[in-house]
Length: 72
Image 1: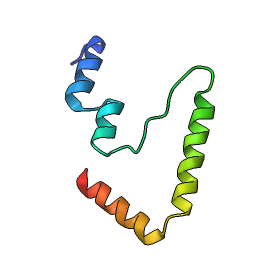
Image 2: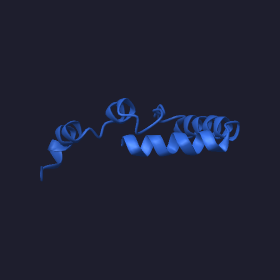
Image 3: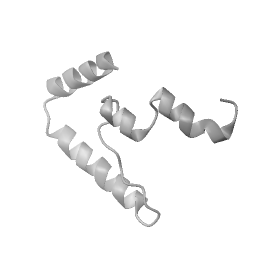
């Protein structure tokens, strides 16, 4: 795939699309990308994730991280 026009085909074969990564459990969510509020969407997603993680027990977080990477 030395042709840049083949990038979508290569991504599909390699399972590199956001939908594939979400389905495989490699990413936790997709962030909506729009011109006018990309950074607001990213900030909200990051803030929500940090809030959730800080309320979760450290042992649970470590166990979840371990299991996630073992699955990958």
